[in-house]
Length: 592
Ligand code: NAP
Image 1 (cartoon, rainbow, N blue to C red):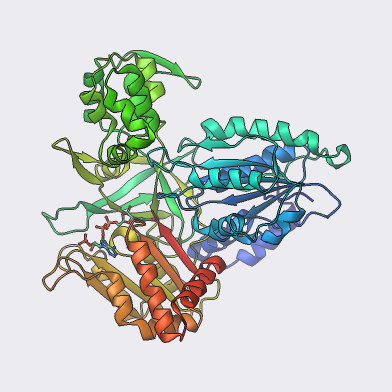
Image 2 (spheres, protein in one colour; image 1 turned 180 degrees about the vertical axis):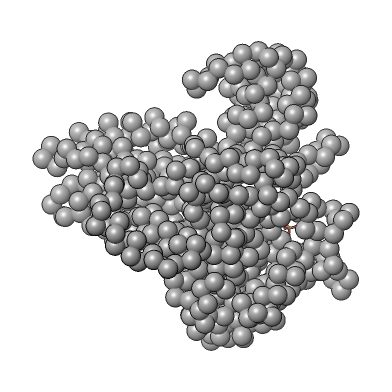
């Protein structure tokens, strides 16, 4: 039997008997319940099938670690191609992989992303820890290949994949294809890696074990990243007080007619469009004509269209700095790319946009070279702030316009600015990105604790809507924080109504810039540590959403302290207990 899940509805027709049985079961269900049932079934199809191949039958094990879904998608793609090549395949999420089996494997492909500061995704922490520890045994019989995903606007690009690749080789394993590194435009490098990997591993299988079978494809929505849905904008309104320093918005979109279903915890991918002002600035800085035709990736488009809808202009990347350095005589650019220039490069990547370097270093560009130097534009993900159970075929988002100031000018993030200016009646190109690790407990009698400062509160609005519709007995506790109670208490009236109707049991607030000094959510966690520990000890699920840089780590530390103090554990024991919750999926984080 082959692993993987079907992705193509057309390849898996339902016969009349199954349809009749489903119709019988669906009889009398309200539309919201039908949505839940459809989403539940879809989620079953999405779960990686844990097929333990028969010991004597050779198979390729594909292990993935994924934070936002890109690595999972790349792993699934490899599986489809491997199956089409007649290989038996086993697809496993890293936290479900029994590491002791590694010593018995013959063929393994690892597809893994790197988070901001060189960390593995949450679902691969245990796997990476094991592999890099002394517990990992020698692997002389193993053939492997690694696809590392990363973001070249961070200095530690693809660090986790590189570490795994080097470590497996150090343990005596042999590469059947060299390490490949994929930037945010994943397919550019993932696609050739897949070909090389299959060409490398297939001849190593004993021919009796290569089977001629039609691949089974996973079920997906008719719309995905490459086939987005044009969703109508129903509402786009600020939800902070007038004159607030930040522009935070509640956006409602219609999914009517799309067939798209989502679950609380999922994210909505939005394909952005660059502002025409920024495109004009880039054309001016490069002295290029926007009408110049550029042919690339099978597309022939005017340069201005490439810049507006196909190229990244708001985030600087290392390859762009390198392309500019090649054209410029300025030593500063070259120095920033050397190991000793790491601090400068990091500062540039964090604070500058391509336009800033184009202006600082005017060099001769051709339209073609500029399109090659800039990274492809990729969709941005927003945690969904609604549940079908309450909003039917709508989807709601909480959007904070990313703004910063560089070179004396106000700058915006591409997608949030695009969303902020989206007019009601207009459309946005969207798709759903599943997040299987950020799910409500299946058992509605379980308590949940949600920690979501700022726009990190978005998925918890979805959670409360869904739990209200579920009508279970589990209690819901929300920790929320923002700057000022009177100005940016997001969804204040909804939380108050939820407290009243019993769908929210506790709400603890931390406003950081009101009089009385800084208060963050973690202070509230510490103040309520005894009760919090009681909830966790009683089986509560714990969720954190929002900023990954500082908040997630500070909240994690406060949780360890609460567990150590009230669970009679040492700091290390409390930390290990929390790590175990993370591995079990009872502590889930959606942070970036
Ligand atoms: P924000 O302004 O960054 O922060 C919200 C509140 O958190 C403010 O009161 C802020 O206080 C406080 N805060 C600052 N440092 C903190 C720390 N170390 N621990 C706890 N609280 C701290 O909020 P935002 O701009 O709405 O968004 C939050 C972040 O979450 C963004 O980085 C966004 O990208 C991310 N986000 C991620 C997801 C996701 O992963 N799915 C979803 C939504 C948002 P001060 O500013 O007064 O210091």
